[in-house]
Every structure is written in C-alpha cells, then in structure tokens.
View 1 (cartoon, rainbow, N blue to C red):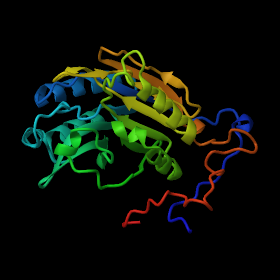
View 2: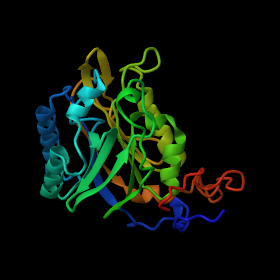
View 3: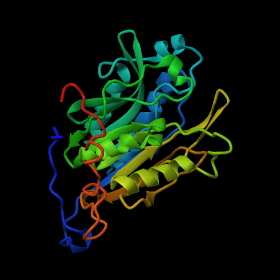
Length: 304
C-alpha cells in the first residue's frame, strides 16, 4: 500500500547524536478542579493557571478534559446548556487571548456544540488564533448519553517547535490512537483527561492511567503530557496524578498530587522523539510489519 503521508527520514542511533543537537521547550500539565456547570468560575481558573505557566516560560500547556464546564452531567439538556461553538464561543476566545499574551500554545478540554450535536473536545489555540480541534473518539460510560463520537479523526498540528496530537482520557486505553499519531510524525501527545477512581483497578494510590501514559510513550517513542483534574463531583472522585512522560517511558514530571491543583512542568528535548532507534538494529517505527498490517492501521480520512 502506498502511504499518503510524508515519509520521515530515519535519523541515526541516539548514542551517535552530535552534541548540541537539541530542541528544548517548556511544557506543562495544568492540573485543576473544575466545578460542574460553573463556567465563569472555571474559565477564570484556567486563565489563572495559564498566566502562572506563562510567567514561568511554558510554551505548550495542556488543561483537563471539559475543564470549562465540569464533567458529570445529569442530562443532555444540561450538557447542551453549557456547550459552546469552537472557536467562536467565549471560552475559546478567552484562551486565544491568553495564548497571545504569553506567546504560547494551549490544548484544553471543552464541551463543544456543533449545530444539534455535542462533542467532548479539545481546542488547540496559539498566538495566531484557533489552530484546530480534536473530538474524543472513545466515549466513557455516560458520555455516550450526551456526546457524539468524535468525527475529526486524528489530526496532527504542526507548531513552531514540533508536531502534536491530542487524546482525551479513555482514548489512552486504545493503543491505535497513539500509534496513528506516531506514524504521522507527532512528537508530543497532549492528553486532556479526567481520570477517575475505578476500584480496585484505579485509585489515587495506584494511578494505572499514569502508568499507561508511560507505556504509550515507550511503545511509540513520543512525549505525553497528561493533564488530569482533582476533586469530587457528584460523587465521582478524580485522581489527579497529572504527568509528563518521555519517549523512554519515564516520568519527567509528576505524577502530580492526587488532591490539589498544581502546575506539573518540565523542560523537554524534542530530539528524543525524533531519534527512535533503540539500537543500531531496532527502531519501533521501522520494525513494524507493514506487510501484515497497513502502515496507518486502516486510518485514511476521506480528505486525505
């Protein structure tokens, strides 16, 4: 099968990399506590955290899933009342202003309205305005009652420092998502999430989702920035533990607090996502058996 995607040159083994070949950027997961259906308060909190990160030189910021509205809706009508168009709605416009102020890029979860349809989405904005939108592919639990499954595929956004893709929470349970992004050349996966306690599998003391982020980074040689929320909302407990993982599967920041809002920040070297060799003979991308399965796992949006 002939790929419709740009083919990236295979760089040399990292051990042979020349000194000074670095691409450093400060990134952060902005862990916060949204309040359900209190949009004004939530937007204000996001702007405060964006301002804090911007003052520390962060150039890529990730905020939690549905951070402008809260998560546990009681009805579709309640969700629809909170929803906004992207990028014309108030929330996205405020985030664009903040991105311009700090010359930074922001990926943030939002309840999106598109005509009669609702989506659990991430708005990607920067100094130049709205860059794109990702709509959650894999809906968790009662989300299926309020939202439509995402229909925009897995877009990779080219930013000045590198390429990013977006996940939302439950998407991390499906390895195809991260692999498709990696196959398109993404350096960083920005994960807006609302990890919850699911006893006995997921607790504040055993944040298995954060460990999943490590594995997705390791298997696909990408960075992951996972921004979770904290607090209890309508009897649902969120676990925090926001984190940043590197292409070797290590935590470079976090996991964060299970209970408190905080800025989980790191300076990362994007060249580590571009040197994907484990050895002179092993590269997790070029070693794929594309004679058995196609290069992009059957992912070919119509527009391509």
